[in-house]
Each structure stands twice: as C-alpha cells, then as structure tokens.
Length: 428
Image 1: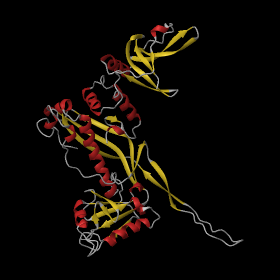
Image 2: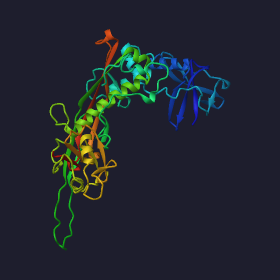
Image 3: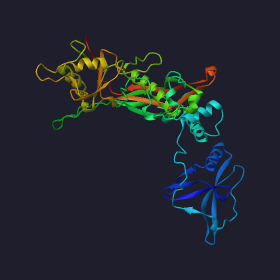
Image 4: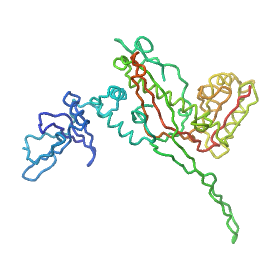
C-alpha cells in the first residue's frame, strides 16, 4: 500500500500525517499522534485548515506529490516545487496514531457537556452526520448507532470507587446483575439504518403445481402478498455519573456508559419482543401476534419429553427447518424442567446439558415464569431507526457533581412469520 506525506503550510519539515492509498481512487488520511499532528487534526475539524494537493513540476510535466494543509482562505499555489523537497514513501509513518479515527463516546460526552469540541473534531463530524440521518426530531446529541449498544449514580466513594486508584483490574470490573439476553441471543434479524416507516413484502401463500391429463385445463392458483410494517418507537435508558468519575475512572467512561445503556436498551427490546402487547407506544411481540402456535402442558409447571417434541413439531409442520430453533425459559421453570425425568428408567431428564430435545435453551427472566417460548428467531425482525439520541444534563444534579445521560433509540419489532413460534403455557 503506497502512502504520501501530509505537511502543513507547504513545509516538508512540518509533517503531521500521511495519506494511505487504498486502490486507485480511495485513500485514508491519518494524523500523527504527536502534538503537531493532533493540533492539525483539530484545526481541520474546526474548518481553520483545508487540504490541498501539491504538485511536483519537472521537465516532463507536473504530477501530484503530497498534501498540504493551508488556511481556509488560501488557494493552492502553482509555484513549482523542487524535486529534492518532495518526500514520498511506500512505508507507513511510525508515529501515526492508529486510533485517530475511532469514535470516543466519552470524548463526545465531555465536549457536549463543556461546550468545547476542540478536542473532539472527529466525534463532532460523526454526530452531525448521525443527526442528519436521524428519523425523528432529536432532543440532544445524536451519536452513531455503533457507538452505543441505567445504572444508578456512579460516585467515587460508592459504586465505582474501585475504578479510581493505582492497580485497577479492568478485566474484573463488577457490573450490576441484568437479565440474560434472549431474542437477540437467539438470532433475531437486526435491520439497521432505517430512516422512515418501512413496509416489507410477505408471501402468505405459494402457487401450487399438479399433474394434468392431456388437453386438460391447468388449475389456476394465486400468490397472496401481504406486508409487514415497522414504524419508529422510542425506547430510552438513563445513566448518571459524577464529574470526577468522568475524568478518572477505569474502565473508561466509554465502556461504562456504553455497556450500561446498551444492556438496558437491549433488555427492554428483548422483553418487548417476547411479551409486548402493542398498546400505546409498545411494540407487538411474539405473545400478542395473531396466529402463533400455542401449547398448554399437562401440569406440575413443567413439560414432558413427549410435549417438547410436540412443541418442536408444531413449528416444523409449517415447512420450517426447526434445527436452529431455540427455547427461551425462565430460570425457575428451567430448574423444574431440568428435574423432570424423560422416563422412569433411563436416568435422563427433559432439560440437561443446555438442551431440550436437542434444541438450545436460553434461560432468561425476559420469559415470564410459567410461560416459555420455542421459535426460529430469525423470523423476528428488530428494526433500528438512525443513531442514538443522547441528552446530557450537567445541571439537574450539579450541586452533587453528577451528570445525567438519557439515551433514546428509535426501534420497532415485527414477527415476520407467526408459525415460526410456539408459546408454551407451563400449567401449574
């Protein structure tokens, strides 16, 4: 991969980065991790500098030689440059920062809170682009979808006191217990980048074929086309942290906020995907979808081996490959099923080694106790509309030195094929 130097003010002694070419027409511009390089990056982000191509003039004509950062009001100079002044290399520059273009959620939060984006030019650019593509009317800072995805107030003397000190073991950070992921873990289909209401065509019935006698009419059959619609619905979570933690905590605030908001939002999505009733702002989950398979077990808050086979067969009978099907079961119900023998003599149980009748089981409190689910979860669609809207509030709890962050994500849930799911009532 070839590369060329990025200089400032036409001075080849003032190198601040490099352009790495990727093919004939594309390239990645990276700034040096040195103080000069980082200052140049901030000046470009603020619009104080523009990038111009410097040409090398020789007896054979001129050709692009390097890039130069010039004040925005200045135009490219046509003055010839001597060949000895131009440096080109096929090797990367050693002191370039490989993370120069990694979005930092913590840096964006600090910049928004303090009103100073001089140290977060890249984050500002990405947030502006995310806001332009936001499906609704954002109330705060819109960050890219991939940068996120609540906990109680984190203070230096309490919840995260272990995050401030000398020998912090970041790989042993102790988070609060949360429900295990369910539908996302089970393989629900994720649709990103939506920016308006969507309608997905769905084939409800197929055409039929048959053998016919000579000179007989062919029986006509029609395809029944329906649509699945998805509209933005708001799900939100709040995180609070002290200013001192923002400056000194390890793991970094990026990971603390990212994990807290991600897990809270995805947990809400998981719960609604299973039990959302479609009322008000709630999406319609599996339970409230008309036409799903249902099974009521015989009793004792469990299912027998024979019943588990019937549950799987009910899905497979709709021309669906049930080999990738997954059970989602409340942990208390899982314990009861795990104590249920398959028969009187084998010494095996309905649920053991993480499987029921050969199908994977996810234990999660997203499934209400007394209700379990079996399904092929790729037929459950979860659509995300735009980025994540962050409202950063340093004022409400300013007396206590606490900053509150509320994250809002626009999302919707739709069951693509109802017969891919079976709701199981574990009769007491």
